[in-house]
Every structure is written in structure tokens, then in C-alpha cells.
Length: 345
Ligand SMILES: Nc1ncnc2c1ncn2[C@@H]1O[C@H](COP(=O)(O)OP(=O)(O)O)[C@@H](O)[C@H]1O
Ligand SMILES: [Mg+2]
Image 1 (cartoon, rainbow, N blue to C red):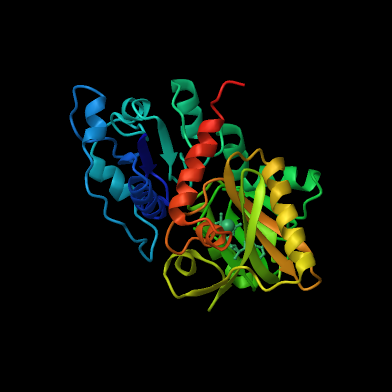
Image 2: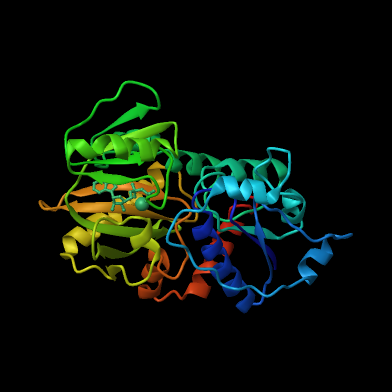
């Protein structure tokens, strides 16, 4: 197959996405596909006369690593140096149209929030993973919370604050996060009132709206879901602090246990809850749900991720491996299940 792996984009999670993209592209190459890795924001840079030339050009793919800090998006805008405001780079729609499928390795804004999925639907381009509706719902932590609560899935009590609007709190400790964030960017655990203003300021630098949630004390567990069925549970134990950007992507900073050492009954409840979140939030093909199990054994859903990371420290590939699915097989499975969506019923 001819596959475009789409990564990067103008998202605070672009470095994570480039790492996911380079790894997935390598896997798809090993599986025998013709793969072109392309950055959504920078576009496809090479001239071509005929679409078939795009896949003849099989450039070497070097696996990228995630830096310790979030990329500077203003500097990237300047680097591209175009006067137009398009968040889609040159030739993206054309080269994606030439592929049999686009493997979406994007995270965060534009790629995980349903926008690129909607553009591809309109352009008749096939892509992997969840469609525009599920992506938009899951990316909006506030909307997702309402839907989860309506479906009987426990989520932390929370309030939504608007930039420049009245400030209130829900007591301390609490968690402050951008409404549509990812990778813990702009997220803080606030133990004392005096740190609240700085946490809000940081979160508001990424979003017009900020979610403040009750802090749930307990064990953090994630569950991947493929085609509606839960994978083994993974437990995450950062060596210090909470599961923030650094602890997520710098190797050795977090201990991970898969399968998690939990009573069978809790494992089953987590897996069932993950499948319910998948259904309730309109996920398709695959996803990963984040939970905390509190001291009473209650399962609280933090969020669902329609495009979970596929980096070396990412959780879904580790869970898949425990289920006997290698990284390469996981990528192929994502492609196959996604193509099934387009079969005429
Ligand atoms: N309500 C909460 N209680 C305790 N910890 C939380 C809560 N919400 C978020 N966290 C911590 O912050 C991290 C990021 O939050 P999450 O809602 O999963 O957003 P992201 O999309 O950035 O991953 C979680 O992995 C967890 O460690
Ligand atoms: Mg999360």
C-alpha cells in the first residue's frame, strides 16, 4: 500500500507526534508498504509532476526524540515563513489524496480534535482512527465529562473557567488543565491556594477555557482499546511529581507495570469502563483511556485519547505487546481496521 504518515502540525504536542510518526512510518516500511512521512504544517516540500512520483521517493526515516520542553510554535510559524494563515502546509491534501490511506500520527490541536478528519472526509481521503465527531468530543475534556457522567462513568467533579472571566475554585488539592490539552501541557496539580493563580495563568496560555478538577488520589492506570475491546491494564508510577510532560516522554522517569498488579475484579472494571468510554465518546478503531483507581477501589476516568502516543515510552504499544501484538503488528492492525470503515456495507 501507499501510505502517508502525517505528523507534526502546529500543535504543542508536535514533537511527540513526530516521534510517533517516525516510529510508525518505520514499522509500516518494514511491513512492506511505501511510506512517506509528512508534516501537516510544513507540507510536502518536493516538486512532483504525477502523484505516483510521491511514493517512488522513499527517503530515510530517522526516529526523532521528544525534547524536555514544549516546542515554540511562534518560532515554527516564522520558520515556515508564509504570509497565509493556513495551518495545513502546501500540497498536503494533494499528496494525501494520492495515498491508499493516511496514517494519522498527529496529537493535539488540528490532528486529534476532528479538524483534519473533517477535512479528509470532505476531500474523500481515507485515514486511520476515529472520525471527526469522536475526535472533537474526546478532545474537549468538558464536553466529554458531561457525556461520561450521563453514561454512568465516574469523572472528577470539575468547573470550567473562561479567560478574563470570574475566577472561582473547588478547594484544594485540585488539578488545573486546559480544556482541550494533551500530554499534560499546561496541567498542574495545585496543593495550596497560593499556587492557584500561577497554575491558571499557565493553563490559560494554551486555551481560552480551563478545567479545574478535584484531585483524585490513587493509582493511575491506563487502558488501551482496539476495535472496542480492552487491552491489558498498565499502571503508571512517576518517580517524582505527577505524570507531566517530562515524566511522560523522558525515559526512566516513570515506572510502568503491565499487566498492572491489581485485583482481578478491579482490572475487569477498568477494562469494562474503558470499553464504555470508547462507546460513549464515539471512538473508532482504537484509543486509550486514562483512569485513577482511588483508595476505595473506585474507578475514575480522567479522559479518553483518540490518538494515543506511539513513542518508545508510550503506553498503548506496551499494552499491545503484553497482549502478544508487536509494534509493527499494531500499526498494521490500525491500518486494516481503519480501511474496514470504508467498505461499502
Ligand atoms: N482529577 C485528577 N486527579 C488526579 N490527577 C489528575 C487529575 N486530572 C489529571 N491528573 C494528572 O494529570 C495528567 C494529565 O491529565 P489528563 O486529564 O490525562 O490530560 P492529558 O490530555 O494532558 O493527558 C494525568 O495523567 C494525571 O497524572
Ligand atoms: Mg492523559
